[in-house]
Amino acid sequence: MKLNPNILVTVLFFLTFLIHFSLWKFVFHLDEIIIVKFYLFLSVMFMMMITLVILINRTVPQFLGLSVIGLILLKFGLMYLIRKKLNFEVIPGYKFHFILPYFVLTTLLTYYAIRLINHDKKQ
Image 1 (cartoon, rainbow, N blue to C red):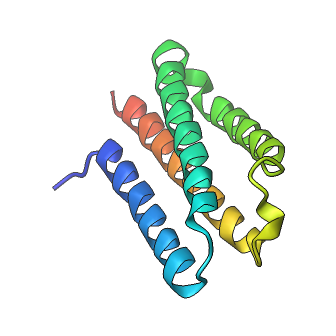
Image 2: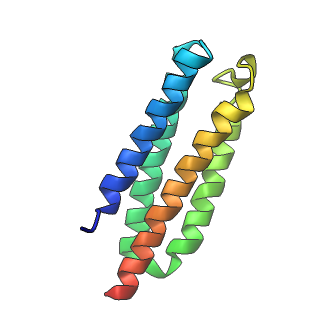
Image 3: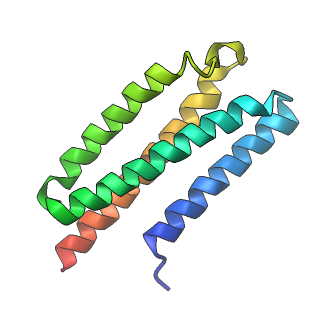
């Protein structure tokens, strides 16, 4: 059975959130407001990136790989700008808590783009 990449990426995203939120709340006993804001920001960014990847694939599919690299750099820049707003530094071990989900979602974005590129090559 072939799994739709949209469903797989969505399930993995929510699974990442649930695992991280559970660790945040029940193991580290930290304030859940910060992580909810962080994942809300990541969710909006992730959906924007997926939408842009789909639009780029429909208009200029030959530049999809290069545009994914650019989108990842854009996401990194926005994360750098937003870190002061979310007060990451007050969380003990904040680098672990915020970099790991960033890389998981970047990996999911890359996986989605690779699936689109491979699908186009089969056509």
